[in-house]
Length: 53
Image 1 (tube, one colour):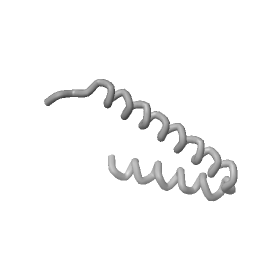
Image 2 (cartoon, one colour):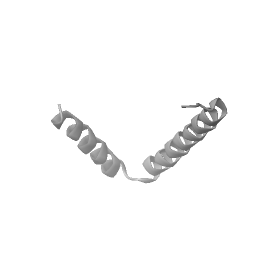
Image 3 (cartoon, rainbow, N blue to C red):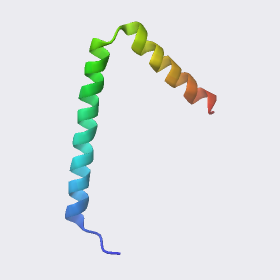
Image 4 (tube, one colour):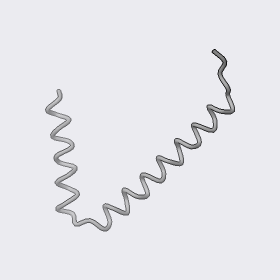
């Protein structure tokens, strides 16, 4: 198997940019969504993680 270092660097950069875009969108969603709505979603997510333990 031949590994193309340049291709890996491009994928890493793309991945990093996608994560930053996601964070920007998520922050915007939190800012525009009532606290009661997003805090319940966080609670549900955290509770579901504990159920798997």
